[in-house]
Image 1 (cartoon, one colour):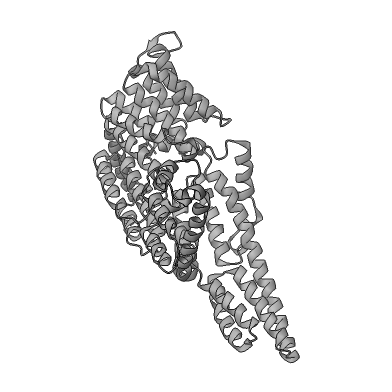
Image 2 (cartoon, rainbow, N blue to C red):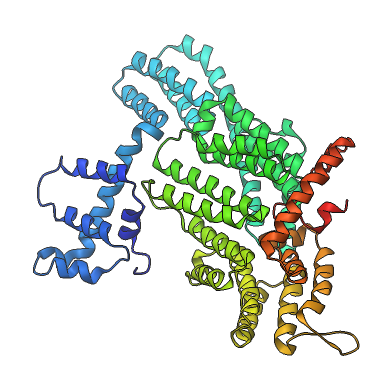
Amino acid sequence: MQKNDALFELVQSLTKGEKRNFKLLTQLTSGDKKYIQLFDLTDKQKVYNEKKILKFFAGDPISNQLAVAKNYLYKLILKSLAYYYKEHDAELSTLCFQVKILIEKNLFQHASKLLRKAKSKAESAENFYELLQLLEFERIILTRTNDLKMFRGLIELIQEKEIQVSEKLENLRQYRHLADKAYIIRNTVHEVEKPRESELYSEVTQSPLMAGENMALSKRALLEYLNLRKLGFNFERKVRESLTVTRRMLDIFEDYAEIRLDNFEVYMEQLYDKARFHFILREDEEGFEALDQLQQLKTRGAKDEIVKYERWSLLKLARAVNMGESVLGMKVIQEIQEEREKLEAPVSKAQELMVYYFTAYLYFMAGYPREALKWNNKLLNEPRNEIREDLESIARIMNLFILLELDNYELLDYRIKNTYRFIFKRNRMNGFEKAVIGFVRKMTDNRGVLDNSGHLLTLTESLPGLIEKLNEMLYDPREVRSMNYLDVISWAESKLEGRTMADVIRTKYKRSLDVIRQKEKEGEKDYRFLEANGAKSRDVVK
């Protein structure tokens, strides 16, 4: 694909329904329709190739004005999308526009009747921008009707309402500014390791807006507050508290249908989190109930179906990995590939890359390093700007262990240097990365690790030291995120025990269930905190 070809990217993003709507719209127009041929040619391409398009139109005037034709087609597609989604997303804005038209025609009674309907809808959905616009329309109607008595009776009510709405809008804006900072933290590999992210984390958690729910002046603001609270609990690894907040958000969405429809992706995210937290807490029955609710959820259209698909498919894959169920994981991959064929639009690149990673991980922990390497390289061969920084970092590290399994020391030496440079450029390496890269480097340099007396330890002899070092990091929230992506402890234990990594993770997971049941019998229900990446060593010693 040529870099940033806007038309190609737009056409490729269209669902079957959107394409059908575009074709219906073009049937209503007259004149030369070469742009429809251009649309079909662009739609059929998997990788954008302008030379093939020019070859098709050779000798046609359009070939000399292809940029103009592409620009025209781009705008026409946007127009068709506007018509397509008008009924779904623009009801309130349409009402506002209709009120304005009626005012301009001096049909004030008509406008007032429609305005009351629009105000009711805006208030129930907490659409503050539209509500302020409607209040201004109400003022205009009062001034143009030339009824001074009515003006005096109502203008103060309008002004008071404007102040209330403006305060709520400003309050929501402040929460969203905090959410912007939280986004940076959430998408940074080591949240509070870097000074900038540490500063942002403090700004979020110590903001006066986070003093309590009463600081939120609207339901939308309350949802932002709760989401920020969940960020803090997630960082502190308080899964039970995160689950409680998620349930609270779902209750709000269930009680306020208009807000749920306006924030449908956030609603699906909460269903995803609810299932995920239950699985972390080993509450499988509740987890599957939430997962089924997500999968069966009736959405607003094709784009929501994509988001829903991405959520449940990754959750199923992650659960298979965390349980050490490599066979189940492969069945899940087959299931999500089959379901993907039913979707009307392509999935996101982020989803595709996560499937690559999970597939590589499943092969790696099942003891098939060559297959793992193939899938991991598919991820790493994607353009750098397509891959999330944390995912690329951990995929590079997994490559080191795959090459170690394959005894490919020649390539491994190059990959170690390359991986170290990549991670070091982020200004700081966490303890997990230092430990595992350092371990692989020593194994590559010496084909073993030197102890304090200068004795060369073999791989098997050096593993207990690596396990001990990593176990010390298990309670450090700054390290756990990376360790959850790649369970090096279980890999090392599998080498010591002569089993596959999947067997080790599976044994730990089953053992953790026994520990939880015992703790529950003892009345220690608060014990139910476990990490997402399978039961680690500490899970069975508390």
